[in-house]
Image (cartoon, rainbow, N blue to C red; front, side):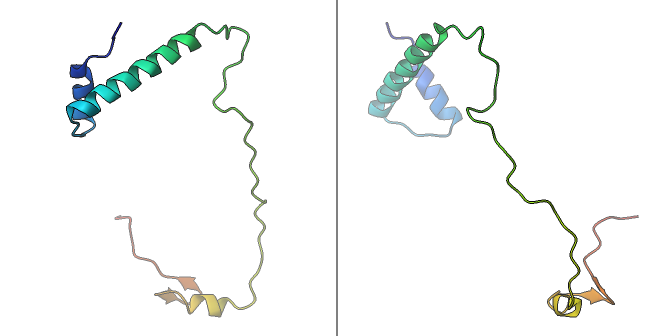
Length: 97
């Protein structure tokens, strides 16, 4: 039983701005059918006792803690800036008062 029509594939292709020939339309219809069949299989699985999650594995922040460090030669860094004023970087104003 075919649930995905060629018109539906054409509509999705149009929304995605894809140009498909008839062979590609039929191929995508078959692939979408297989995807829907797989989803039907997944719907049969009992997940009642499975907690909701957004990831399969736990993600851990591996960044180091920021630490303030004094740089001995600040003039060297300031000289690399396109513009500076005294001991500060000078940047274009972006907020109007």
